[in-house]
Length: 74
Image (cartoon, rainbow, N blue to C red; front, side, top):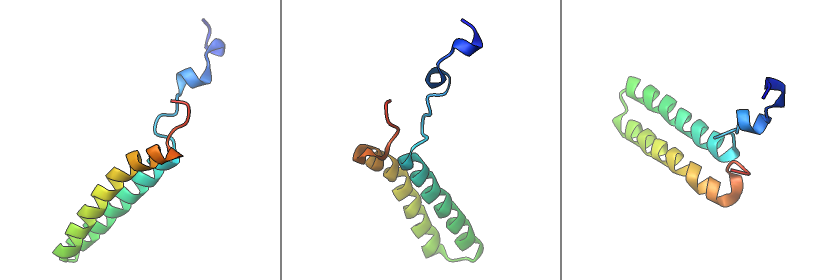
């Protein structure tokens, strides 16, 4: 089989390229950014709040995927 004969879906199935995935990753990146800032500013309560937001971001992916925002066709 030649390279031109490959199905693009076979080569790149697009795993994680969904609204659920991107939303989850963005929330987790914001949580890490805020946690780092609050750690630098010596605000331990807000560091822990950022850790909680990180967990929320991790839980968003499967919740949003089950709500229909996950990768379609996989």
